[in-house]
Image 1 (cartoon, rainbow, N blue to C red):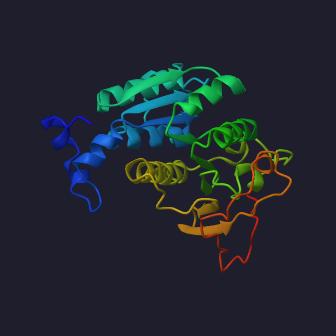
Image 2: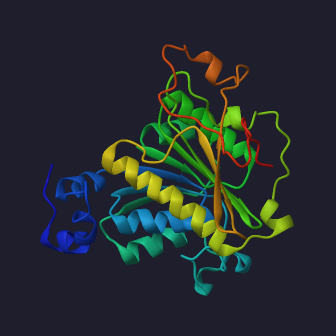
Image 3: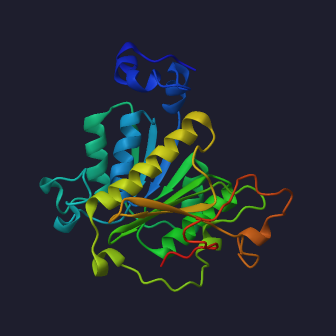
Amino acid sequence: MPNLSDQQFLRYQKQICLDTWSEEVQTKLLDRSVLIIGCGGLGNAAALYLSASGVGHLVLVDDDIVELSNLPRQVAYRFDDLGVSKVDALKKAIDQRNSDCRVRVVRRRMTDEQLMLEVTLADVVLDCSDNMTTRQQVNYCCGRSKVPLISGAAAGWDGQFSIWNYHVGCPCYSCLYPTDTQIFENRCTSMGILGPVAGVVSCYQSLACINYLAEENFGFQSSVLYRFDGRSGEWSIYSVNRDPDCPLCKDREIEEECPVSLFIDKDKNESGARYL
């Protein structure tokens, strides 16, 4: 594994001096790849943080263009980017900030086969999409490929994120939201969205991602739902039960108990959470 250049050492020195971090860890980060599905409010900020922190490879997926209503929360975009493909505008912003990060863009919605290929090439996948069809598709491909998934969502004053590592016997995203669940789409359009709420969720997504890439282990709990209340600034944590009827999970043999500690938020006293 090559050493950091002098310029790279100076750039990342504040991270290198962290406890449990090192020049070797930073070098490893530069060799890692993250697939980001969706370049809106979540994917926008997450991509900036990951690239700035020294993640060496990003693949950005989005078929949308930058619109004026995006600017309050999609902080990488500028007025001059209106009408430009989101992935191209985001790649430009990343290139201007850190040339260590190599960015590849996908300007279309992918078939299952295309997405499966992209997932298998990634070390971690961030689902920052805004519709349930895509989230289920991403979960399916990650589950089949055993590639960790960090999923996020935000609407109104509320946000959520969850980590799925697909250990045998553990639940997946479809256990939380079954594929036949009817969830009202376009929540940002109907409910609005406060930019900092999306920023908080995307920061947690990128933090969990960097933690995993550096340590090859999640500091956050996997297979639980983290929910953020933007009005109070409080987080709630919910357990997620494995759904015996989940089409993805029931195809995997149960060879061991789930290695993560699932627990119930004491104030809410709920399990098998549904965030609608």
